Image (cartoon, rainbow, N blue to C red; front, side, top):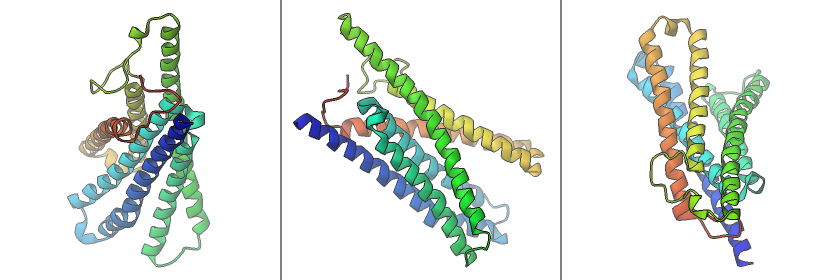
Length: 258
C-alpha cells in the first residue's frame, strides 16, 4: 500500500509542478508582458525601436519555456507511469492552453476599452490557436510514447535473457545528449518539433508580409532567433527532467528508474 500511495503522491507532485509553471508564465505573459508590448507597438515614439523586438521575443521566450517545462513533465510522467496513467498531465496542458489564449483575448478587450461586436470571432480564434497547439502536443506525445515504449521493451528483453548490464542507465544524465537515453532522445524530438513548426509559422508570416521578404537580413535574424529558442527549449526540458528526478521523484510500484 505504501508504494501505491507513493505513486499517487508522485503523480500529484508532477501535476502540481506543471500546473504552477504553466499558470505562472502564461499569466505573467498575458497580464504584464503582452500589455506592455501592445502599448509599445501602438506608440509611434517607439516605431523602429529595438524595444519592440525585445518585448516580442520575451513573450515568445516565456511561452516556449512554459511549453518546454510542461513537455518535460509529461515525458517524465510517461516514462514513470505510461501515458494512460498520466493523462492528467495532458489535461493540465489543455486547460493551460485555453487559459493562455482566453487571457490574451480578455486583455485585448480591456486594452481597447470594450468587448467588440465581433467577439464570437475572437472566441473562434481562441479555439483555432488552441487546436493548433494541441495538434503539436499530439505529435510530440506520439513520438515520445514510441521512444519510451521501445526503451521499456528493450529493458524487458534484457531482463528476460539475463543481460541486464545492457540496459542503458537513464538517471543521472551523464551527457548533454545521449542517443541511448530514451528521455534525452524525447527531449531532442520535442525541440525539433517546436523548431520546425516555428520555422514554418515564420515562413508563412514572411510570405504574408511583403516588406519582410524584401529584407533578407531580417528574415535570417528571425530564423536564427527561432533556432536559438529551440535550443533554449532543449535546455529547459533537460533541467526540468533533472528536477523531476532529483527533487520530485518518490519510489513507487511502477516503472522504477533504471
